[in-house]
Image (cartoon, rainbow, N blue to C red; front, top):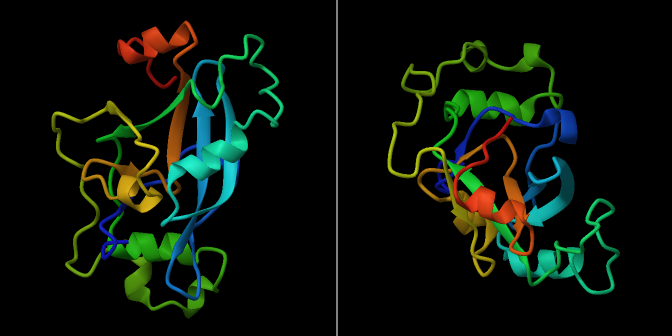
Length: 189
């Protein structure tokens, strides 16, 4: 993660996704599970396999194509391909240490007794556990995702701490909720 310029934090929304992890393929490309949340209605979608080198556009084209059925709760048909925007919350969370990341990625795949004790003590290579990200002008701010960017580029944003898997918030410019969201009058429950 560190070599890719990404910061991994503690899991969020596991009640919606279960325990999911990124997978590395034979070409060293990370394939991420991605959670999409619709804050207007507190609903969600899940992309099982989003390669880090993919841009957002092709995934959105499939999910929100004219041939796709409308979202069951979208009675006003506001969530269309041309009307949606994606956001992530920057500056929130605490990055995990290297050893905490390794423990998370290996959890359930190996017997913990077979791991060196140094991996189980919560210390990283420098003997320090993860520290809280300092406040900045982006702390707790909603950052719009540019559809032409790759998932990797978005995850490398300096203030984005990935909550175990990438989480993006989907809003529609056609919705009355959009103004509330953009004005900063909505926050996570």
